[in-house]
Image (cartoon, rainbow over the protein chains, first blue to last red):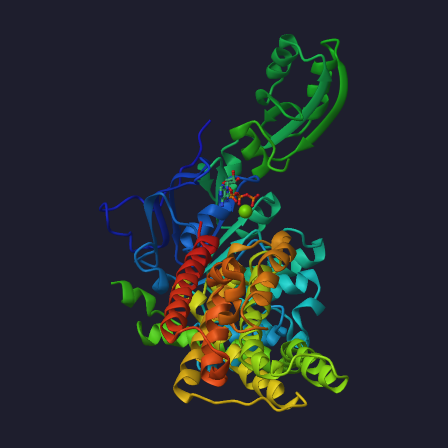
Length: 331
Length: 274
Ligand SMILES: Nc1ncnc2c1ncn2[C@@H]1O[C@H](COP(=O)(O)OP(=O)(O)OP(=O)(O)O)[C@@H](O)[C@H]1O
Ligand SMILES: [Mg+2]
């Protein structure tokens, strides 16, 4: 199995950042006091204008990674740069050029939607007139122009999430960090949010997004790093990653009992590349799917086993993750 | 290289320290003033109600119905100002802070502003200090006007204009410390266990010197920061009732201010950084 290690940020001189990269980490590590190694020698490189995704299950270390890049979590090892600025050494300079959307809603509940944006702009050094202008611009960008005067609590969850993202954009940051921005949002709200994010990307915004929805990573990100236990398991464009599975079709087969003879029989079907046991049953990886399913089913039935279920799909990032870890992305 | 990189497109990119510090600091003050202005009426009511009821019952109602101690109105002037100021720090700083740390998580956004974490804590304290000064301006006239027998004050300006700001500072620092050290589940317990004893045993309703009759209590209450403010104000307003020496007053106030500020900022940083 080959995993594309599209490692563009090849380490340069030990203490200098690679100037082509907007976000760069080298052996970035976080060992929490309790003994959890949340992020383990992470090497990451994100180019200017790139939409980059960190995809991983709960506890993978996504929030910790963003926390370190945004000065909130103190690393226990390694280095990191944002736009060439050393994050550990120049925290205030870094804060000035990043926009952060945390995993939790941190809106100022005593202010209206518009005021949230206005005051945020002021925190970041905009003059009153600039802040007013930017607040109005961003309100439009996140499609809340009608709700400017509403207090935060009067907005729906999806609207609050959009406002949260808008607020991170008021000071026109170089990099936007989004930590699971669509978790807990209804499908319609998610689509609206995706729209906004794609629009931002089209305008050249560099974005680092974390998610544990593979559809989200596939739809939005140009490059995805699959993360688990603080480590990157694979990195590349969604297509590259899916191709790394080495199959165009995946037939998932649930049969009882699973015998070596059954596996061998399936492997012998022409077009089948490999057969693996996964959490949902036997995974038959194969080339083009024409006429394959009946053949696979026949081969299974000829082995005198009980065929419970058979499903056909194409590789997704979920498949990639499953093959790398033997687990499913969403528990 | 660093500053160049920071100064790429868009608006932003103002100079670094000390302007870089002052700008977000003042912007946060602006936000706090907006919220305060909006909440002015509830803020006033909350501040004034307790001291008002107290002077009303003990220095208006009681004398009228022939009960109560003579001169109590004089004792209450410094005492109630001091306790209102300290109480303000807990009500307007500590409780909101506990919420901002847990439920609303607003703090997590505030520390993303280009200001060191201790700067955010300092801003919270500065605003609390100003609020405490407003409290003095509200409570002082109240405790002077309401009593049937107008309190007899011998004002020592120098003591007054130093003890009041120190006390306001102390209230802000205590608010920060309690607000960062306590989690939401403990807040009612903290009220019962710390805030109530502090106010009742803070030389508010009696001059500290009279506690000589209960020596152990007199010594024990030296641990209460409020005592130093009450006694300082007693010296500044009603010295004939006897008060703690100014050395002790200023020493105690400055020590408590320093300790609470140090502890508060430390706890604050510990809570927002991991
Ligand atoms: N403040 C902390 N102290 C100790 N351990 C922590 C702390 N924060 C996170 N961890 C641990 O570090 C690991 C990574 O956590 P992190 O929050 O970075 O994961 P995540 O990928 O963001 O997960 P999720 O999808 O649940 O948000 C977890 O095992 C978590 O328990
Ligand atoms: Mg997380």
